[in-house]
Image (cartoon, rainbow, N blue to C red; front, top):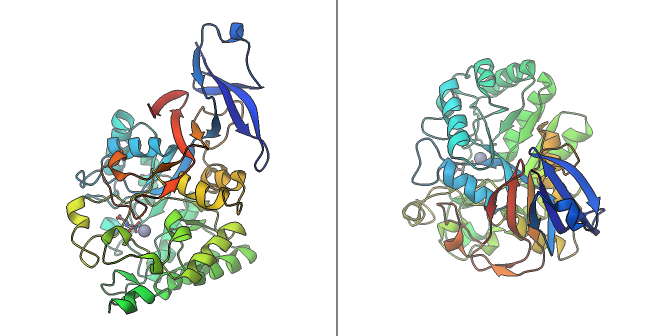
Length: 428
Ligand code: NCD
Ligand code: ZN
């Protein structure tokens, strides 16, 4: 028995939607036909009515925190993957800053086993660059690769030593693996919660300078050039980083980059007060930086959109702007936010946005998913592009409620998510 998705629309050209029906068999897309399907052809198969919905490839998120093992009060692989599915994501790449961190084959196996038994979307684990993310000794890259990691990162902290980073890149390059970097120079940031800028001045706070990110980006680009590794920059937030990555790409250095919805939509001038739901790392930057990040994504300097889904408990976030941990949740608002604020305003086409959340991440990390082609895995999301709804954190499937987007009126809500042809989440 197969599954027919009928009455839906597929994007065919930048904003052009056409009526199509999709047939799924053995977890793969078997057929895509124009218009409707005769009732007799659907007999004996499961039917999914996608009336009024866009049929899109399942979204891919290459930067997420699932918190397991060790921080199950913030999120688990079970809740995190449900939150991802509700956001339309079918493949997510989880960061290794758990407890213990993912720096051994055993912890990789733990995450993969949990994802298999309790997760509902595809989970790709990152492995740490350094033991315990302490920046002192490299992990065993070959063993981690063998255990199933697809790239290395110490996300959560920057790799402080240039020599350590160079050694990491040399080893990763030899294994054909990417190095993915949280860029932050700790000699420039000591205990600040927000960016240097209007908000910090107004509240008499220390600010995190743009250079703390960009200095690592610049350093690492030079090291990537020297080692030939595929170097990927996490959550780009500053004008200077965009400039450096643009130049590196022009020079043919193998660098790619990601940006988060919040760094495209919010600046430090939007922060309403000392509310930790507006605190994340990197912080919301100035309007000039926001503009540079948007331009960077638009001209291809920045390749993909990621959420940096970073759930924390309400108690932790209630500690206030200065004491609360960094991070906001992202899965369940990412697509509607960008669709409403960039596509419906006419700045981007729907194809532009979808590409940056599907085919581009697949291209950057050489993944098999993110496309609706015949023969591809049937990782599919149905999206209602018309209905408007407010962001209501009490509806989140994530354990985290920490978002600055509460109450935003948005369109573009996923209604049903399928992984390998199996419905893993549906609205009703
Ligand atoms: C992340 C976290 O909470 O683990 N926080 C954040 O604000 N982004 C760490 C990170 O991605 O750097
Ligand atoms: Zn990070």
